[in-house]
Length: 205
Image 1 (cartoon, rainbow, N blue to C red):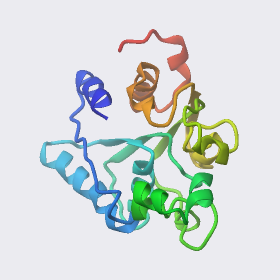
Image 2: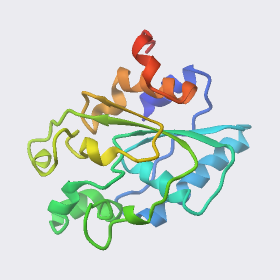
Image 3: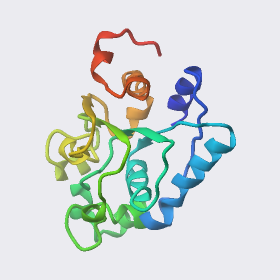
């Protein structure tokens, strides 16, 4: 997320770029990182807090706000979020190599089965913008996904009924965070609460 961090700092944002141990912890154990990040912002004087997440990060924010309130939390841009789960987890759930690669949190991202977390996640009080990728570069995993997809998450699975705006980009799941188009869409949504008018603006990154 360092390229996105740099761009947002150039726009004048205070940025807290948090990582988390997704390969060793499940989703409920990881959600406190959201609150910790918000506290870091507040300690540095922030009065309005936005989020930019990639993949699982969007799920952690949704999970955190199931039982927390924060009037200073405003907008979130989700990049390639498995909001409805990923069919890849359904296909490879029992494979040892997949369990090692995705960890306990990844095992909760399926679309079927008793461990999936999505049926219990209710809408959150943030303005949500979703950016979904349509480029698959993985020769193995993409076969388990409906088209179009980004190689890890199908476009359909990224969506939420309550999202304020949605856009697709020709980027893969892993590498969308480096895309100038994605970065400019992100900064436009954080400022305006929409992606739409960005289409008529020149890229600045």
